[in-house]
Image (cartoon, rainbow, N blue to C red; front, side, top):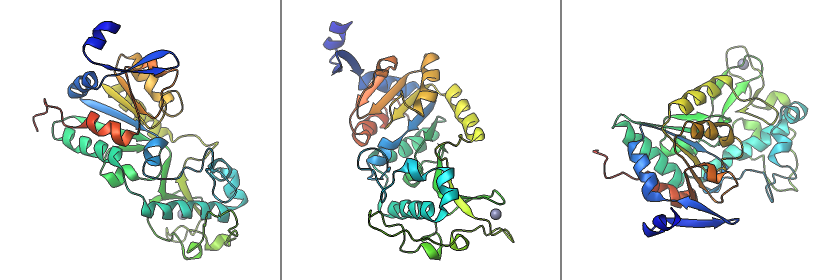
Length: 293
Ligand SMILES: [Zn+2]
């Protein structure tokens, strides 16, 4: 097997003493046959657009990381501070653009739709870069920076205002020496449903909160339906891909990882393409010679 694969010019990668398969020609055959493609995307895709995650080494906003501020407890203790953090994250997105990975996914969805095939994006990213790239069929399992939820009436609404409220204008500087704005609660983003005026919060899933059950049910449907699954910019052994990809692989459906590194679980999946997904994904999703349109 090893020799015959070499003879056909397949490329291999050495990781921790194992050989890992990155065979684009074989992937392209599965891609050409697929009718329903599920693409799970994670932080790596956003990172290639320069979107900060505020996690890991060097990932700080003032002296905090996301896990300190993206919690219901932090919001109830200091809603002004948490809103400053999210206001900053919303404003940062004004200078960020979808990268070639986002664009390749969106272009593929539009093209395959004309052929009666479907692409769904299941993302943990909250920056809406998939939407901005043109993707239509997106399940945001962690919500969005550009949606709010009212704590009084529960209404969820898209919100692209900049600044989100007058009191946060010019606030949210990430510098560790920046002073907390201490915006009074009544001046933070408030609900505009008639007579409500409840405090709004970002419609994102915080640490310690569970995922929306309706969205999870839709993800399950997509996982049952798909006949090709891509895991992009996140490892298949970590959440959220770890929740979904193994059930697909167990049905015998090809799963392809596009990631900066391989993991001990990579061998469970059919394909692994290593490197920045902005480089590896466009050739993988480009029109196949068998596509009529
Ligand atoms: Zn309300």
